[in-house]
Length: 235
Ligand SMILES: C[S@@+](CC[C@H](N)C(=O)[O-])C[C@H]1O[C@@H](n2cnc3c(N)ncnc32)[C@H](O)[C@@H]1O
Image: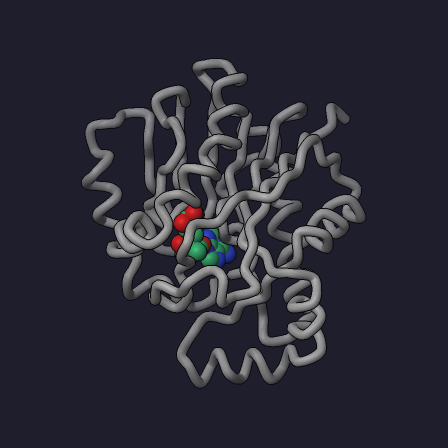
């Protein structure tokens, strides 16, 4: 398991997000809630890379497992009376503690860009592996709900051209190794992996975005966000 950038502030993370971009989390929840509310009340849900953030209707879920490389003790305390919610350690690249066909829904909210590696080809492999793992643990007809932080197409082109330089800058700034897809190329990647995209849309960001624990005006960034709902086929 790689060192987790979020380790040292995982307890503060959810509150920081709530303060900086509350509207974004509400907008994302509209998409997630619609799928949860269509599912049976005893549905089993895995939220991988949860970070202590539950912005959707957890009361409509039979069993919610919030997994992450680091578990937020604050979140454990906050939700201790909710018997349907459990926080555990889990790695999206290796969900071996769960068998195939376990969950009705898997939620992956703003995690994919953190699966990056120092080398672009390994980043592509990690993202493929992460998505494959999520689909593996889904039941047939189950849904993978992706809310992802993306960038404009032109910015992604720059990221690809200057990949080593950008990763070097992130190291100097003591930031995580990250790579953000454009909405277009993330959709294309998932389709090329052979998965069925049932729905996709742009998610409205807030006035500010959270970057390296700072509140940055969204209009000064190439940031966007998207929703992708993948349905696992019966076969
Ligand atoms: C930007 S935060 C998103 C947290 C939360 N889902 C949200 O919507 O705000 C990224 C989270 O992904 C987690 N993470 C990064 N790599 C992961 C991996 N391989 N497996 C599981 N979680 C991972 C980090 O610990 C962090 O909590």
